[in-house]
Structure formats: structure tokens, C-alpha cells
Length: 260
Image (cartoon, rainbow, N blue to C red; front, side, top):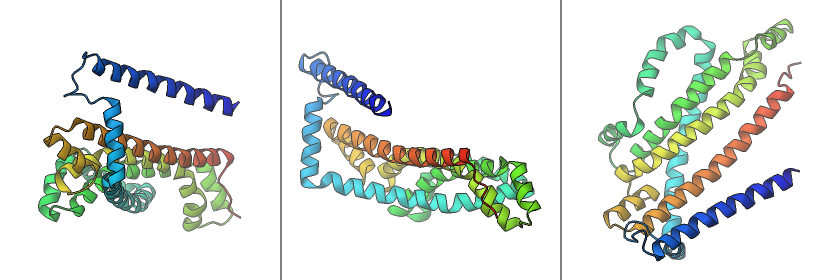
């Protein structure tokens, strides 16, 4: 049944995209739309193949992925431990939350000029704003996951002689993992959007840098190549994170309490 459903979904997606691309090509061929503003799909494919042959696209993909994952991993490594601490110590969270909410509401691209002044043009400001964009969804979801831990599970471990470390290790952290994974997916989405804006201003390589150069030269095929590549990469990473999230949600449904 799942095989048939998957095949049907793929078939419908393929059919929809084929119709869309066919209408796109036909409207440009007949002159309904102007090719100066909208490149034909055939030209975009040719441009992408040309960039792949020359290695230009691979270089920019590697630069963007390296820059993004540097910021994304930094955000995860800081946000999850800090979220656990703030979730466990409510009074500390009450003191810090006003400052966190103030910074959280500042769009990361708005901080980019300050990051450039502070860190200079190059990798550092781009990585900084990517980490900042990914940080708060992971942090807030981790705090929420800790707060949503079921009291009965905590009481069971306490009754069996468990200390605070046992509670964190066997109950609180495993219970919070599904919510943390949701935060990681949200953080990925925001960080991925910030990636392009940061590369436009503060980088000399990457897909965002490629898009900015194409915009200055009015190279619409190159712009569509960059946008398509960003979309495909983002979709692949999101599907991977979604599978991990689903795994932990299903595991939580089966129970986490393994303390003995």
C-alpha cells in the first residue's frame, strides 16, 4: 500500500511539474512572456549543465553548504545545552527570557551590517547570522520540550532512587528530543533563508554570491540555476531532518523510560 501511495505521489508530482514547465516553455516560445525577464527552462537546463561541466556550480554549492553547516552546528551545540538549563531552572529562564525575546525579534539580516563591522567581510559574519537565525527556534523548542516532560515519569525515577542526573539522562532529555528535532527543522529553515542574504552581502563565494553577480549582469538563466539549486538542496536536507524527527516521534510513542 505504501509503495502504491509513493508511486502515485511521484507520478502526480512529475505530471504537475511537466505541465508547468511545458506551459512555461510554450509561453516564451509563442511570445506571450518576454525571454528577457523569464528564461526558458531549456536554456536554464543548458546553463546548469554548463556550470556543472566547468565545476563552477559545485564550487559555490560546497562554499554555501560549508558556511551553512558551520553556523547550523554552532547553533545546535549552544542552543540545546542552554535550552536544557533554562528549562530546568525556571527562575533563571524568567530572568533571561526578556533579553532573549528582544534579540529573537531582530531579523538576522538586520544584524548583518553590525556583524560585518565586528567581524569583517568573509566567512565569520555569514556564519554568525546563520547561527543566530537557527539558534532561537532550537533554543525555545528545547525549553518547551523540557517543560512538557510528564511528571509521572519523573516521579517513577525518583521513587526508584534516581538523582537529578538520572532524571535528565533517562527522562527529561529523551522526552524533549522530538520537540528539539522540530526546533532543529524550523531553525534549519530560517538559517537556510539567512544563508542567501548573508552571502549576497558578506561573502565572495556561494550560491547567494552567484545570484547577486547574475542580478548585476541581468543573467536570468544563472539566477534560475541558483534558485533551483538552493531549492533542491534545501528540500533534500529538510527531508532528511524530517525522517529523523519522525523516528524520534515514533520512538517516543513507544516509550522512553528505560531507567533500572
